[in-house]
Length: 272
Image 1 (cartoon, rainbow, N blue to C red):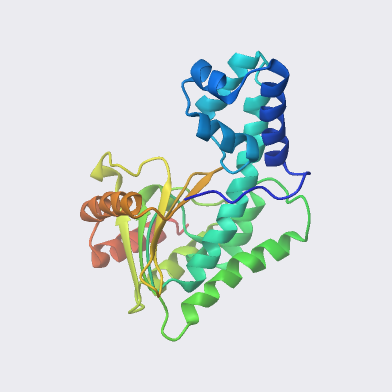
Image 2 (image 1 turned 90 degrees about the horizontal axis):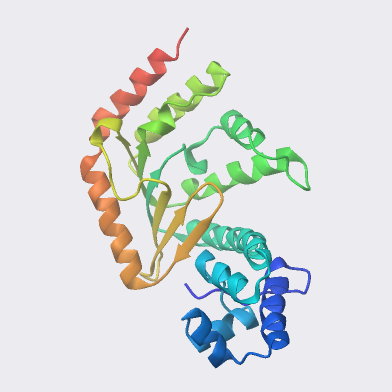
């Protein structure tokens, strides 16, 4: 997906773009010379200087090496990437609210299926929000579930990695309520829940969670997310590749009835 140009001189992305251009101009290099030094395309480097693109880490490492900046650009890139992640996540939620079909592979219980008490525990396990009442963050997450009450609601398939079911919070009551909520959700005609057991072995989606969305106009999107980053993809060929990976994982997962039984067994094991 083409990245939206940065907004505002107070953003880390603006500072990064400014520094990339300043360093080149102070060095006296042209874009053509910099392209030769780094083996990256001149047009691509120009788009970094304007903030139109945010590079991958090796590009910043190469520029730090050319300018001998001791990792400055790499550190600025890390800050800018976090800003882009938040922006992409907001965009993803806007698409999610419109989607007619969703397929998810998750390493943790997705927000759409979390109880309020469990969401509160999950959100409290991370850094304290810089601003706002923490309860507002809980309300915002639970508020996303309004899309499940649309008429008609979206058709949703969630593949839960077994890891999502093997990391209970300290409060076992909250955990049992969460597991029970998953079982109830699986009974919805619009919801399919499958469990990918550890015994399924290695697969292409290890290391992150994937959401595939189909919108009313027929457009399809993919959102690949790790704990601290996310990528929103609208390129047709890339989305198709992610869909193939998802289909492979679905083939490895337990059937929907066996998955519900699996969750029920986990719930029984969590009872004192």
